[in-house]
Length: 190
Image 1 (cartoon, rainbow, N blue to C red):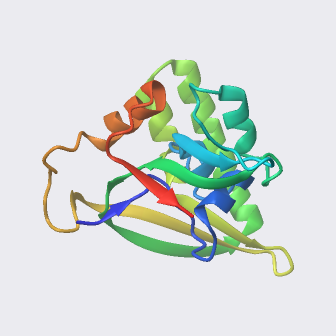
Image 2 (image 1 turned 135 degrees about the vertical axis):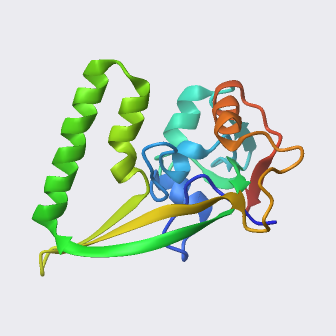
C-alpha cells in the first residue's frame, strides 16, 4: 500500500525540514505548502534544547518556525498528515505567460462570483482549475509550462476502494488540523 502527503513538492532533491523552514513547495489551494501541512515539529534550539511545538502548544513560535529559514532553530522532526496514494495523470501545456495570466484572471472572476453567491460548492468548483496545477515560467523566452494533475481513480493503487481503519482522508485532514489528533500521521526524522 502506498502513502503520500496531501500535497507534496515537485522537486525531489530537498529536505522536508528545509521546505518547512522556508514555507515553500507542495502548495495547493486546499492543503497549502508543506509548511502549512505540519501538525507538529521538533526543533533543536541554539542552546541545544529539543522542543516540540504545535499550533496548540505554542502557536506563535509554530507559525514563526514555518518561515524562519533556520534562524530560530533546526527542525529535526515533523509530523505530517498522510493519505492513500492514488493513480494520477500528469499533463503539461506549453503556453505564454500572458495566456496563463488570462486563465488565472478567469478563475479569479469565477471565484469572486461564487463567493458573492454564498454557495460553498460553487467556490470549490471555481477554484478547481488551479487546484492541482503547477506553473514553471521561463521569463527569457516568455514561455510557461502549466503542469496539471488529474485523479484517475477513486481507488488506491493496490485496487482497494476503502482502507480498513483509515478515516476518509478529507474528513481526517480537517480533524487533525483542528484538534491535533496524531493517529495516522507520518513522522519524518532527519
